[in-house]
Image (cartoon, rainbow, N blue to C red; front, side, top):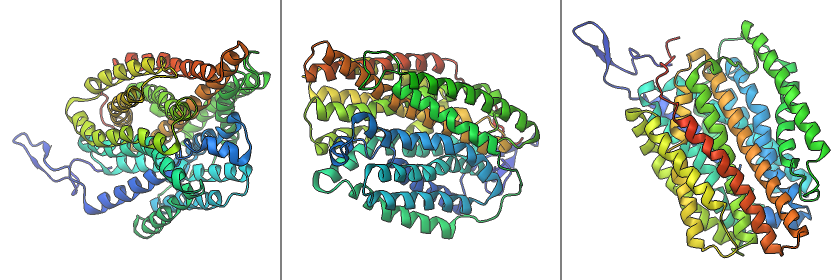
Length: 497
């Protein structure tokens, strides 16, 4: 971490003899490192949602159900939630270049396999390989920013990170919609592959390769507990409504068993990490939770990801199945929201450096709640311009949520907890996205089938399902407003610890 008297941050002494920082600019090497990671992370995270618009076409191409095809999105996010905890170990054992090469190598291999997948099972496996690379890239990016960027400028840089984390998933449907209008679904991967390979080559040649001191062993028991813990949670949420087949018959026994196994596994995982961190050998050090703002901001981020990923998978299905909008039109309707978030993220980052989190989070979370409740009133004849307006409002709200939440969570952590704090944040953020996708799609399928059994027409039944899904997201968004009231950003920066 750069200290205030670092050569990269020259200062001068005031009459009392204290150091006053007057230049927080990064050196060219640090800028290049962060730039390569930002571009690479944007490419890999884009693939979290690039297939959302293609799901109806893939259902036909592979002759699979809606419940099955949604796992192309859910399995991607679930895999990242399972793999991310290992990044604390990787970042303490290997150089930045080695970890980066592993991440982009996995992603590139998965992308190549997906582009030539002969069946649904192979495509699903390729998505898991892609997700393994993405999982490593997320905390790698945030840890590097914490290590290289002074606290006084982190808001601005985290604004760029927010572009990657929020805008890339938001514009994924747009890109896939444009591709599907003219080309095969395989080009969603064939177009991304060259970019990924260029990023891999550039990073492998130019990123630092100094090995990191440390010999922390990999905790195999922790890994064995993480898989059923996080995996069971997402699976249970996706089936708790009974799915499309068992709708109206109550929760599936398998869903309840999965949730029970998940809770037991996560409890054991937590106890094990608390014991291992005493000797600094935890797979996922939980001491970042001792910082108040980290815990509050993390809770806010998880709930925000439930809403974000739930909406960006439900909305394309609504536009295509209920409003009969083609894939190109769906993608173009999703584009302005992603661009709005991208334009506002750096501005919000600079505002954060001046005013802190609360003046940004309170209006952002309040707007999100209003928009979510408006989404829950969508009908089969809702004007498209109103749907677009709501989506822009949602994008505006997330622009004021992501950067302050990320920065407030990570700022107080000492250097020794940077990698673990980033891993914890990335793990639960991805779990929130996976849970949001699984939960809201499960509610959509369940309520649609229940309404159909009650005598509703096809379109009426689907509208009921969409309203129910959006209403759950709206209820969850209210908790974000409450959490934002308690985030003051006053935890001290822990860089010197």
